[in-house]
Image 1 (cartoon, rainbow, N blue to C red):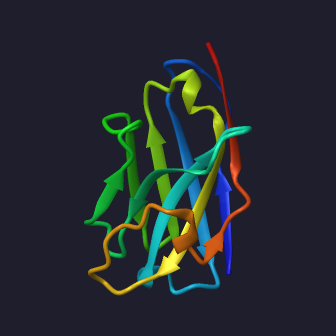
Image 2 (cartoon, rainbow, N blue to C red):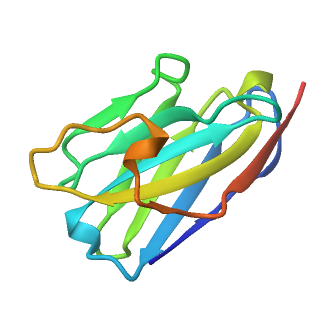
Length: 126
């Protein structure tokens, strides 16, 4: 199983960005996909997750209203769109996957996830 995260880089405070996570080696339509982030010296933090069908989504309070998670099953890709980026959003963003039943709630703890990508770095200049 491979998860390839991309789309990070240097952005200015207030800008928008869109991250992508492309999955292979896993039945994508049976997978819950979630974004976490980790800043230096800090614990890994839940950002947003999306269920198998795309209808169930969950967001961390710190990004609610600024972030939209979506999935394109035909491309086996999950997107994280962020607007009004803030300096505190700077981190390595990692996507994680877990095969689940259709009605599973979005899981927000890293230990619940079986598969991880390598992450994409987001740097924010103020």
